[in-house]
Amino acid sequence: MNLIDISTAMESPAAHYLGDPPFEREVLLRPGQGAAFELARVSMSAHCGAHLDAPAHFIPGGRRLGDYGVGAFVLPALVVDIRDPASVEQRELDGVDLARGEAILFRTENSRAKQEGRAPPPRPVHLSLAAAEWIVERGAALAGLDALSVDAEGDETYPVHRCLLGAGTLILEGLDLAHAPAGHRTLICLPLNIADGEASPVRAILAPPSWTQDR
Figure (cartoon, rainbow, N blue to C red):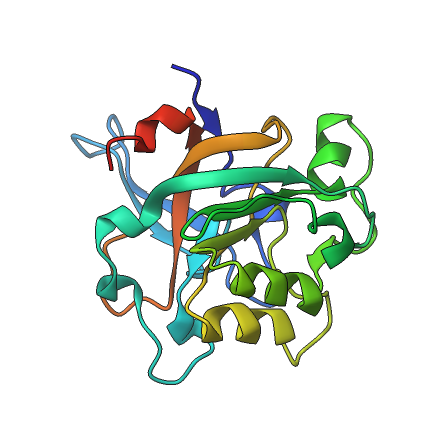
């Protein structure tokens, strides 16, 4: 089965959004050191690594992760290659055939640089507001990006988050799409079972499109 892991390792610096609590793992017990087993404590932001944003992240009264059935996190997806080195713009999307209810994932220079062993862009490629509006107009269930934020670095008005989440479109950030070719896939991105969660880390995978044919 051709499964592609598109999650960023939690220990990677790329998994940590500046200013958020980073991933930390503290071993409390070790076998051979007075304990029968290993036991660790983990702490991090809910927005660490590959993670899902629910509407409640920005929208007062918005849906939380516990308001979704598990099927909302297993869905047909389209991976789109974006060539603009700065942002995802609508002009690259006008020929994209996206079905309502699908997820759309953007593979940008953020992932290509990693795949080719080059330095990452000085500022991560982000979504433009026009691209976010395009996504909403076409009824996408989820929008994903290979950066820790869909908004431009330093833009504290967060127009893309507000546009997508305000329309009920889930956001999947922190992806590693270096080995994900363009085309149709099945996206599996199960969050932790946190009923009140505004967000959660996920282990995101791409599977063949046939996985969703019977759903």
